[in-house]
Image (cartoon, rainbow, N blue to C red; front, top):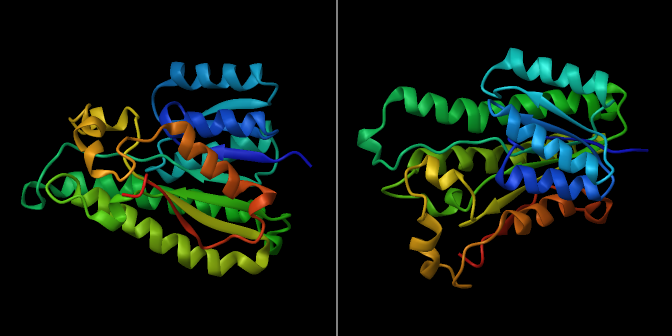
Length: 248
């Protein structure tokens, strides 16, 4: 049976690398994006060139109605979902906690936490044997920040990713008997565009000396871990938080 995968936030970075690797492994892939349709369509073109069925699906995961519409589109165009990568996420500008507005905090948690939970909810409704599904796998993209706290930079982001860790553990236990495995990867310093959106485009270079391996990681290295967790090779792995952080 063909596996049908949704990768949120897949128009760039870790999401795009994951979508391409999964396509090469035989998945049909829905490439979710919030705003950059051109980037998403470029990823879809790569996936199709690799021989995969692929579509671009717009949804800001902070908005439930957009998430519901996205899942409906996948149902119609690709078929019943069997795999989900909750990758969509944001950081904000570097700030101390006493400088953070409630609007910033709501955006951080609406996208990084609530959006991931709602996407997982919709995936479970399609995957769970309780709902007539044949099982599946969910991988949440957390962050080493959930362990490190990101003081002076992104404590709110770290707190959101800590919530993802707890969500992963609880959900994994909840659906383990329904054919669904739930795991998370916790990337460390990875060379992606997300650092520029936080105002520190050279953050990886600045902090590489803190990494025992003395370098940042690549989106491809994280994608390899994600796709393994989705795969039958990880059939007895659930509730795991896999650090892909060079030892940091």
